[in-house]
Amino acid sequence: MTLSKTTLAMTIVALSIGLSACTDSQKESAADAETEVKEMATQAKEGASDLADNAADIAADVKEGTVEAYDKVKDRAGDAYDATAEKASDAMDTTKEKAAELKTDAADKLKEACIATKKKLGQDPEDC
Image (cartoon, rainbow, N blue to C red; front, top):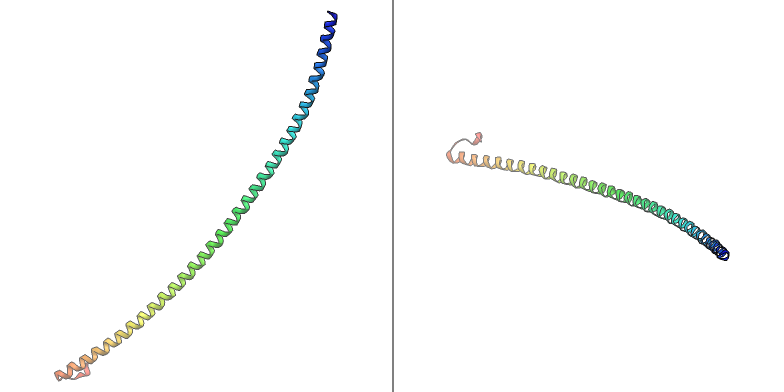
């Protein structure tokens, strides 16, 4: 039995050494994996930061473009309003001039008719 106990003890020592070697290797692998995961997390964080910066830049560009477009539309609308107002004013002036001409023409024709009527009736046309 002494040989058996010695063999058993040697076997246990050999297994312990073997397990210890496996454990060290596993610890190194775990440390390497942890380092890789940390590097990947750092890269992902940097990538997300870059994406956020790009999104902010795009949003700023869109905002600037929208403001410029709004200003252009506003200017064009103002110009169109001014042009329309000017045309309307011109049309009103023309209408007033035509109305004055028509009024003068109507008064002249009414006076001519009055004179003609008075002459036919043998009356004095000075009252016309």
